Length: 324
Image (cartoon, rainbow, N blue to C red; front, side, top):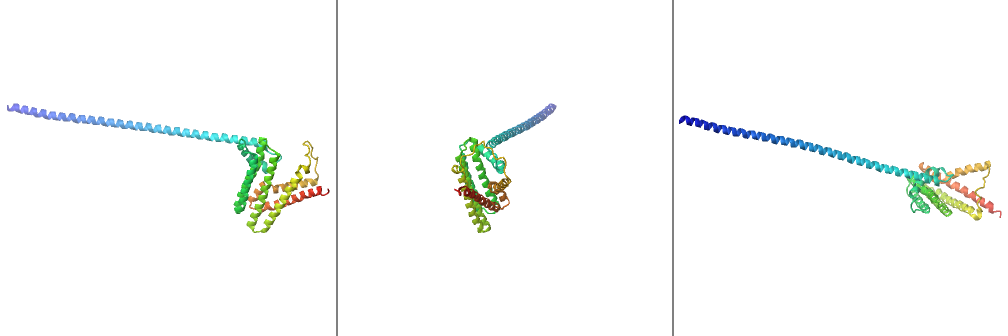
């Protein structure tokens, strides 16, 4: 009985311990296996996330490259369109200049103002803007220049005023070019252009006289300005008179041959007149003296040349009509 109990007790104890130990061992093993499985799953999930993140990052890079490529292509198309448009404008302006230029022409007109005017004409040729409207607008731009001469002292103000006046002269070239381009040039339009030019000359001369008086406080500039306006108006009146059909008579036939040669005196007079025309062609000469800040170098020669011209024109009229 005792041995049985002992064996049984031993067996019972052994079984109990073995069972408990075995159960604990299996549970621990399962936990380890489960933990490792979970760890492996987590690692695989992380690797998947990293792989997905890398794919998404690469996809973003590709989208950015594609957007940059599209932006670059768009910029190329825009610049290409601008280049084509500029080429068309240049070609159109070149054609306008070639077909509407005057021969012969002054250097300043042919190589400075008319090329700029050709660009303007090529831009407005298809609009309803008329040459007469451009002629009148040139007067208002010239008046703006006159105002600058009176209210903006100093060298910078002088240059700014003269540059604005140059814009007025560009418009003065553009009106005739537009009329010739459209085939609408007329004697009335030419006379209107001549009239507006002379009005601008009056305003410019008066403004320069006042500016010189304000800068140097010398009343002689005002007196010379008044004298200059008188001789300028007299020269214009005399020129208009001798050019009237009643006075000038019928125009010479277009096929009339010019004189074979000129005397030495006439050649000398021609050279002097060419120099005088340079001095009184204020759109070009005015800019030169403005750049050096000496507007009186325009004012004094302009008054002197117009006085000589008026005296010569009056002498011609007096000689022709004083004998009858």
